[in-house]
Amino acid sequence: MDPSALRLARWQLIADKIAADPVLLSIPLANIELWRENGQDAVHPLEEWRTRIEAAQQSQGALVEFLNLLRSDTEATRQLKSYSPFPGILTSEEVDRFRCAYQH
Figure (cartoon, rainbow, N blue to C red):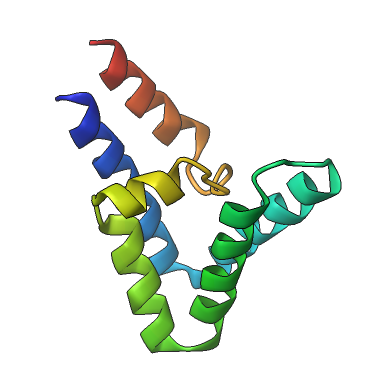
């Protein structure tokens, strides 16, 4: 599988997991808070993520829009995703499967 397809598959898995359990949105919010406290420089993308995540927590429509963003593969979404606050959503086994796929 080519790297761009793997990246998209990874984002789709993250979206699927959040769709199944929206409580998982607390993980990227906690990551954003921790990174900001530790002086993370990418303030604008992290604030954009925070705004989108908090909206997704407030309404079903915003959640659907958020999940569509995660599943999207446009230049704009790829740029935003390059500042991903989603470590901790995927299990270590899921992450390892993608690492192995990248290496083959």
